[in-house]
Length: 70
Length: 541
Image (cartoon, rainbow over all chains, first blue to last red; front, side, top):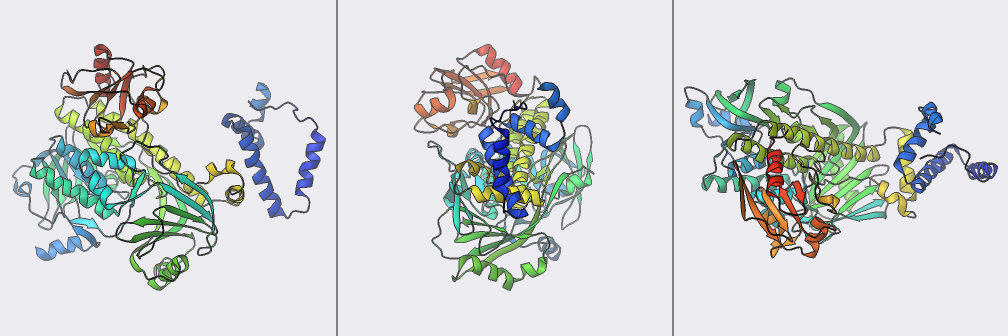
């Protein structure tokens, strides 16, 4: 089950780290970094159902359905 | 007549002439002769099915519009399951003796190896994961086996230069009009099996659809003959120096022939790429300064398509006519061989064993399931090799960027998910799993995994419907109505236990004639067996 409540110990720190990781990259390099990041995180999550849920939210196709289940 | 026959055989070059045109008595019959089964198309699927039916005593006619096997290696990778099917039919050993065995695949990016896989990391199987063998040899060995079966009385009739012009369906047969170098004649089939390839004239003639996806890419095959000590492995490259930005594949075949396969992209000049000088240049860039002969070249594109229904009344589609896949994964010919394996015993049981026609409907259920699985796997490989959008390319490259340093992305590298036998999950012929603790890989619907048994291999003994007792005795023969089952009792040796018992102390399996599992229990139970046999024969569908 995907966690949709706030779950990061320090959201601001993560957000800053994410921006830092992209600093100085060209657009192509930024896209490549994001693609690698998705694969790394997906493997860590390791659960297809959770990932499907995340994909739907990211795509914006099932925001409401998820709002009712959370 | 001689000139007319040669016009028939000049459409494409053949590797072997195996069934020259000969006049059949049917051509002079006053009323059309009706045969139990007529197969259209003498490729691997049609010939395997004919051999299976003939060995079961079912009269079968094979109509082929040529008089032998076409030139060109075409299919080259024959999977373990195909070899097991050919062991049951006869020519398995000949194929293995001639073929090149391989289990190891290596994947490179640029010049570096990024990944390797062993397809058979398990002992105790008679056959290797794959052999490479040119399709003409595969077909020739099947036909030689048919000739031997004919000599022993099997009712098989192969008719070369016989082309079906028209089919007309009736309730209990199909009427055919067949053209030959000496004019046309009428013929009837109780069952017609169309094994006439991806562009199936029978399917088109019946106006049936064949839907799916076309992949926008071209691949060049160059089969070359050379002396080289490269290992017998499947070697696959992403972005190699000799084909930048594209993929390439190298595979060994018998007779010092090597299959080279180059991805070319979508917008190419076909005839320029097929020009011999250009092909030689490509080959030279790949293999360096060595002597070689070009054996066969071809540019292919591919699509993944399937029919909705594989059975239409008394017309059945098998092999590429029913479903077409991309070549990556070796799922075309190997999938087709499993179609033949699935259909042979069912047609025989309906024609001679009093089984209901619902048994044929189970061919649709089981093989459509397998066809879709093959299409799914081969489409996913194609999507990896031929990204359809910048986003697809981005993720493919992300995988390749990380694969050397990070083991977790290795399973995402997709240069072909190689053919594995279908698991008929939810088959109408299977009974509910009744073996507590039994392994997943041998639950009902699964193909029997091989294992050492009776100082040979288990599959050698599963040549017809069998009641298999493991660690428990079963009767030597069980007769239930028209169905005669072989009884086989074997000890629970370690590999057999691991594959068939799991945590159970003993088991009784009901094995179908195609070596798939129909049911299993902890002990012999005559009533449960009788019910499962009824189900296996289509009486509970």
